[in-house]
Length: 125
Image (cartoon, rainbow, N blue to C red):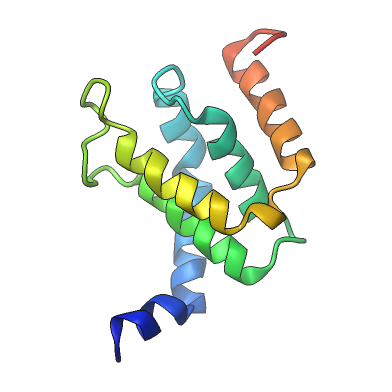
């Protein structure tokens, strides 16, 4: 199987594993890094889009993969590196969001902004 074929073939079992992983660990990872993640709104909106029943399977698969990458403790650039730690996570998420942009609804961003305000305990986050 070629690399192109592998990348375009979606494995429903893998997507399901990534979804379980993301649902189980996303909010804890986010809370632990809340003030260090510069792409917070897109990250949370991506979570809401991925968990939206109206989002097509292919878009969910892409978003769950990007969200799982954010959560994984070991990645290309360790998250604890000052300034550069979330650069690779931001690039992966940006690529996924761009690829599924049509599925990212205003309601996902509204939920994200509301969640950020609640997490930060402010009215104007």
